[in-house]
Image (cartoon, rainbow, N blue to C red; front, side):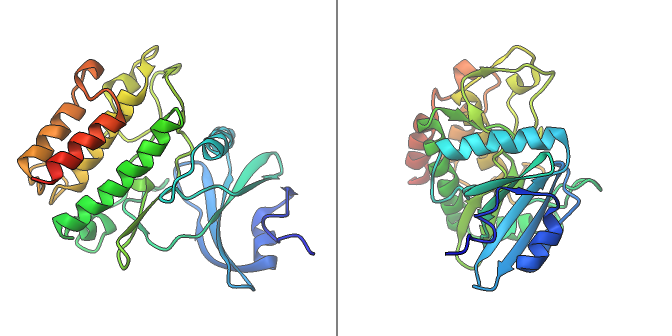
Length: 272
């Protein structure tokens, strides 16, 4: 049996020409601020795959970290990395293509748009509270698996959320900075969006653990369940807002001690 044209290749000199030979390139993302370039490719069989390649040394390290994460954590909401190959001296990873729209795009040309009516985030926020709450429940479920595997969230933000508006399905992508925890910040700050990051992520020598993930998830709930982008129009109920407030305390000791505890309190508050 001939090897799979994507899953049977371990090393390439050039990626894009090869993908064009084995299938149809139906999407290309060449201007991401992650230092990666990505493609959607459809094979003759109809299979669709997402291929992401590192362009910089930092991106290569990130993809290597992501490969380790995906070996340790499996969940239906988390899009898996199923194969990787060397392209020159840098990694490329292969994932199944998932339909949907990323809620926020940040590119090398500047920040994306969250507020125009036709943006993915604005349309997501215009959905019913029940649909947004259901989507966030899927995000929480995935992070229970992350916590159970002894890992913590790093660089999670709305750009990691792929939402299928037709099916109401959420997929998590670009979790390459997730890593085993707890660990210590060795740089001036961790990568990520300030809107979602806990205070300790900006402190060299600070401990990053599951309470940091709790903060990030609390910020995600606050931003996803707001009608706009200024956090002045909370759409959830008061009990949910109280859970978010505790989850996002500046001091880690004042937050919920685990994602499991946060998820339990959130579920209870959502039934009010």
